[in-house]
Length: 117
Image (cartoon, rainbow, N blue to C red; front, top):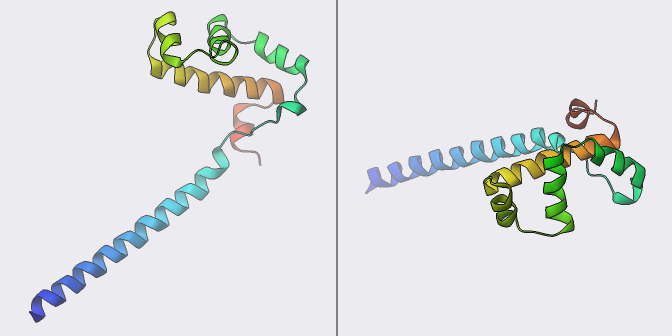
């Protein structure tokens, strides 16, 4: 029995150390990547003119996608079937176009959004 207890204690110690390392890495990555999130912009600070100019610079397909998503409130599945693409592509394009709008409204470049220093 003494050998099994010692083996169990060693296994428990390894597992505990593994969990500590895992928690440390997760915390480190979270803190490191926390600065990469794009800035959020309150809509009350954006003029209609700024938004209209940024929206006008978008390609027609992206304008259509945003209109369907936010004005017509269509589901991504319906948009994908209408545009002849995948649902994942709709999600990806939405993310990209919102970043482009954010950059157009704030007048910042992609690098400035992710590395403000």
